[in-house]
Image 1 (cartoon, rainbow, N blue to C red):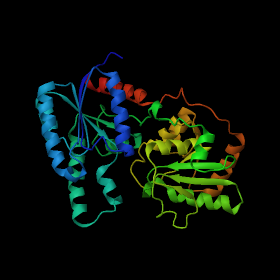
Image 2: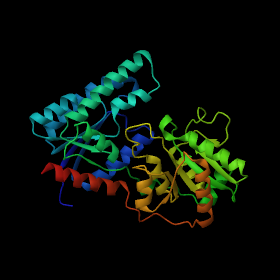
Image 3: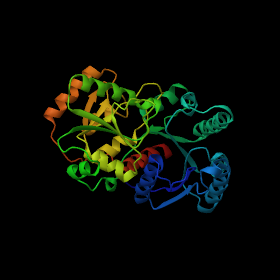
Length: 355
């Protein structure tokens, strides 16, 4: 496309970490760098210990870069950006915010107490203020965009783009090799759930589903990989393989027949789950929560799986058994959901809003 803005990007986390969020951001920025001639990235190199100080120091660094580079767009995410967003407005630089959740709403879901909760509340309110202060907001789910619109906090310039995947992140192992790595039977029927397990992920639905399989004597096993699920599965009904590095997670997905993508409807927006795109990157069909934006709509649009209602284990069991009988493996090489695809969507949206 013809739109080629100079971009300054501010992210107040440490992009050298191995969390899913930081890994995805590195992949996203690498794809964005291929789409534009100029991209300057400022991120937190001070470490988690100095997080609050880093918010201020990164803001000052961003102010210097705004004056020095004079970008067309200043994109930010996180707690940092108060001074730099105001400076951008003085310099007539368009400000853009990535918004991945209703920060104020999600405070109720955090496990913190006391002083730590007070600090996080203050930082969260700052982040929300920066979201509202910017010229353009890029949401990661249409439900979140609609919530902001109904609250009077979004404009016609705002848009949403789901997350994506890096084709180079796929496992190098075959299904058979991956199963040998994790000592899993060659003929076992396996469903894998990868990543962290929070209250909204619906992990407890999978525990109930495994119980349903067990009650009927089905030879289907659900495996959790990479996260601590002891809160939701204290009796170890499902197999848990943790901890896992990124490469190991990809290998475990390769070992699966299918992957699971449940979610609970206890948030304004269910977000755009990175694990869905990890599943797609490794050519595995997905069972996704029915009638849920960012989940079942993507699975249907991309033709990479099935809609199920995880809140109804008996119905879900029947759908899964039918899927195992009818399943034929296919590659997802042509799926249009890579980070390069998503960054082109970003640029189209920002181009339209920037006119």
